[in-house]
Image 1: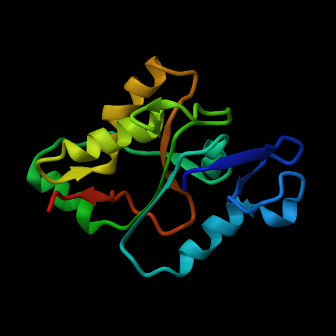
Image 2 (image 1 turned 90 degrees about the horizontal axis):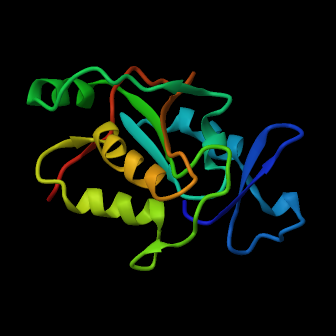
Length: 165
């Protein structure tokens, strides 16, 4: 998802505002729980939500867990991550507004994320992508990207693997 997001600070709940949403009508917004709850029914081994919007870090505030940094880039470690189920969120920021502008017509998050994807030349975990872009985004903006596993969603420490075709 790339677009507008809001945070209801009174209840600590985040929402996406689709292009046709009314700014003052919560009923036209999509809540985090509306995005996350259906994930339990999806049979895929790996699911990663990517959100580039203000307050997108709220997706992980009530359910997020720090993602394991262990391992290396060797093929055995990649195979292990491929075999274990994962449910993760990569967000452009935490509980803050994020920068819509960046480079080449993309947000700062979108620019660095796409650049990292285009540079892949061997199987790469989403965690490795995040590690590559996190500092670049934080150094050039006031936002703090997040990458976390979702609790109680069936994640077992796997990771989304990108493979260039």
